[in-house]
Length: 495
Picture 1 (spheres, one colour):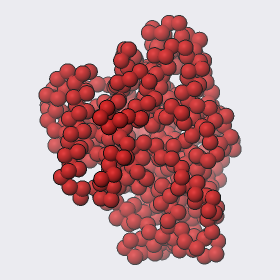
Picture 2 (cartoon, rainbow, N blue to C red; picture 1 turned 60 degrees about the vertical axis):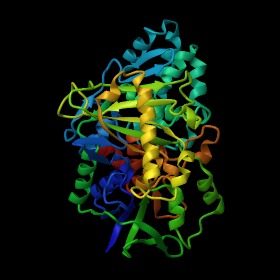
Picture 3 (cartoon, rainbow, N blue to C red; picture 1 turned 90 degrees about the vertical axis):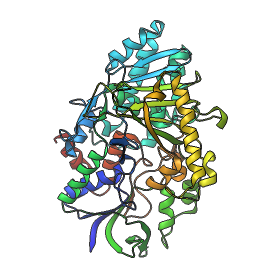
Picture 4 (cartoon, rainbow, N blue to C red; picture 1 turned 135 degrees about the vertical axis):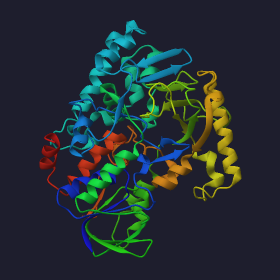
């Protein structure tokens, strides 16, 4: 059978593109190489607890806010149980010099920080004005159909760390404002102000957890696709495309199935895509650029199962830094690991007084894992298991300093490394957030949805922006290459 659109990869970008296009009347076939859908939206269970692999909290879901409106269009609003994080401190940033909350709401955010840094009123005011204006400059953050090119935004060419230091004088406050940059794998010398602003402003508007696991989003989005007549194929790894003289004709899977399409959307890493395209001319310069682009650092995650009623549920995320500079945690020596961690309890419908489980995230350099880089999840041997166990013990010991007795509350712990991310999400070297955006070379580090092949498009966190809101917007941009973007935005606006 020939489909109108064949989508490769069922991460959030692939699922959302499948939703949009199937809703618009296109016949859609979604291919997923694994036996579970969702990419980093996947969850898994241990000892009766649900763990999120990627979506630990999300943003801008209050009535009238931007992600709320997108969720309405995708049929997610009202079907997910959401829990709003503490309005007076959705993130707690802990530095050696003190503990500081980041509050929900621009005015609340400002007044809360000024209670610690009263001399910084003008700086905080200017900072908030700037990140809000940056969001206003991105049309799809406001459901505007104005033409948009991320490369042309001036904030793409300004360093986030440099900007914060230019308006905030107190070095402690500079690092507090950047203290949750794990959300975008912030790099002191590369992260653009645009990336920081889009993420931080969205969370300052409102911050939420999905109760009982992010897999509920996957189920709803997948049901929407099949309900619209779309087809979803699991355990179907796309190997290569067949082509004619100018465009793609079909994609061949590892089962030998040849799936024809009019349009193709890739939700995989761009470098993987290069290996799948044969015969068509792809410029050597483009191939070289893709292969030499830097990825964001990977994440080591420890998953904790707590003994019943032993550890209180924290309605916030706790970012602990062992050094004052909150930008440099990824540049560690292995013997000094971890330089930071983020504790994120899981929201459960069973109790909001005690935590059933939690995820603890910290950076991990791929160099620590080279011994096992040619292995696959579940087949790495006892030495890998011992490596992960020791890392968990080190991380727990570090957490004891801020949460005395937490180890005694733990019934069991599990872990994943960047190798796990690489195997399940197809990211190069297990990158948590895809390609690294670099303000020093914005044109080179940004991949746009349209390719030189007329009927091949890209989506997901490697294009334009990452995060739940960023990928949502990227999916709309991608689909706007196939459908009328103005009409699509109007439908989302009026959902």
